[in-house]
Image (tube, rainbow, N blue to C red; front, side):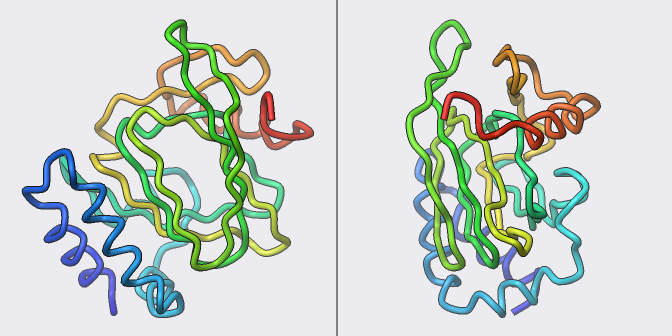
Length: 188
């Protein structure tokens, strides 16, 4: 398996599926999760760090594929993806704190989902979460989004004030540093 095969399989699966594209993508994830080493090998040329622009190995109007790597102690600020999202955990472990976005833009904590190698986690469009590495080794995953991750409107929240704002990559790293320094995910 190589990156081109991953792109071909996911592209063919979601093409023409419209509002059901997430089901097709999750079906592919459930097929490939049986060989995590092969999936990881297909993406080995990517570091998986440095933000979505460097993590993405495929982007189209209805699909993005990324290798995402979080080192130990890394926590994201609350954010959404502007589309549905699915994660296949390849190595390490990760905690996702999931929030409901209220009509006024505030967040209500809903639950935490812990991922280990082989875990699949789906988030519908509009879901807000905080991801953090909970293992000594980096948490590495295949992230699949139902849109162009760099072309869709996205939101992020300040981890201290929980003020909603447009996702701005020039501000994101400062928010991530502050989120990582906190005792835990906001409200969790």
